[in-house]
Image (tube, rainbow, N blue to C red; front, top):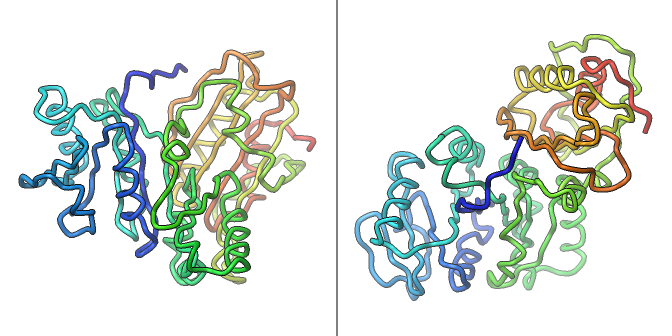
Length: 354
């Protein structure tokens, strides 16, 4: 339960629906230090600013200022290896971060799985955060019509509201309110012409929180709707944990928190989360938790999951404040919060008192 990210290279996933301004943002970021390696599916067919390109050699382009851009070759692992070895051997500049730009309809989970499951990759890189662009003009329409856009928003650590100079104030405020309901933990920034402060997007440590002082901010539980876990202690049904999908696409995304006053048994927490992943992994978009574990008094455990991927747990040396309750936050898709609440309460045999 330790954190070893300091010596590794941070990776930022830049995602967003088609036409939402990802590459415009990317072009702006590449003009700012530090040196960056960019990974794209097909960099030759994407609107990378040609004023940034010094030369292109096969699947790799050297960018002005020392940055490098390359195309995914077969899978992400060989691409990361080629970059790493080129950096190590001095064949390409010593970049200090990596940005992976996904396609407009991509689910970033496979990339996250690669970063976590590949031992070679995980020893040298870590996922710093997911940044999602949302079009201020067409964002509502895209969220209404494309569930992929909703999932991209729900999975973000930072949301960039682009083209705000082309939308009226009332529309922007309405869209901001909608985004905050879909993903209460993600900070929203306005972007015009792709210009964004790089410091607001990097060094997020969104998947490797190990500092007690920042753990509360990372969890952001106060922004989530609190769901009571005062339910009858019974084995929850796993046959139909879904929720009706009527009432619009937004109703399919649920953001909520659970709080437990008493310390929880580690075995019960593990069994509950294992069951949740086994039967509902595709519906578990995001889970964060700071847990008061019976076996580790005074040392909270940080948990983090994306769908079926559970990141290594981290033991904090102390609580971030005087509140030592276990706190879980969830963002789910077509998954009823009462099912999740009852599952945790049943397996831990503990009832919270909000």
